[in-house]
Amino acid sequence: MGSVLQGSWGLGALLSSAAYALLYDSIGWRGLLLLGVLPALAIVYIRQICQEPEIWIENRRKQRAENREFRAPLFSIFKRGMFANTLTACWLMASAFVVGYSVGGMFPSYLQKDLGLPTGAVALPIMLQSLMFFLSAVLWGWFS
Image 1 (cartoon, rainbow, N blue to C red):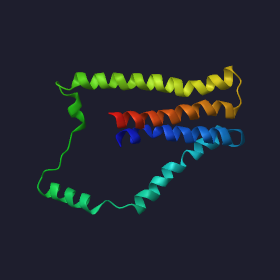
Image 2 (image 1 turned 60 degrees about the vertical axis):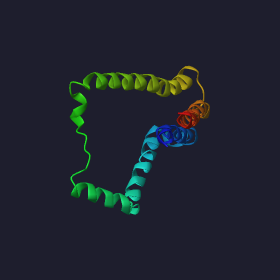
Image 3 (image 1 turned 90 degrees about the vertical axis):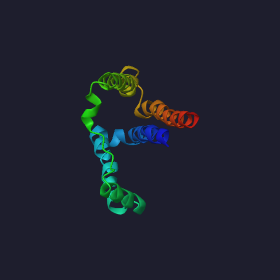
Image 4 (image 1 turned 180 degrees about the vertical axis):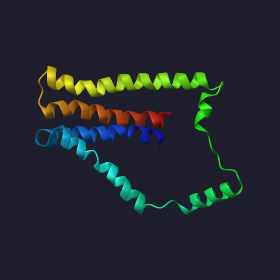
């Protein structure tokens, strides 16, 4: 399930690419940016409708009453024994963001500006890339 959750951003990228292909010529980038607010507004609705499961509420109450609630302070990752791991993880994540976003962010611009492809033709490879990211995340999650 962790791989499905982590890989689901590929589905979001797929939907945003589809919105770009279908709507960019009519509403522009500002309209697409406003469209991106809709999922955030859905969170308000979900928070109002969905309730926490009773067993979770009961377990949390018991943990607090017995003083067994687990808390990991944020700054514990900067202690002497963890600092090298923290820096390594930050370096790896920063590298992944630079590589991922330079490909994901600059490739559409290259297709449109340098190659002169129309909007729909630019969105198709990004949609396929996003779909394959999701499917590969699910596959490797199952495999692991």
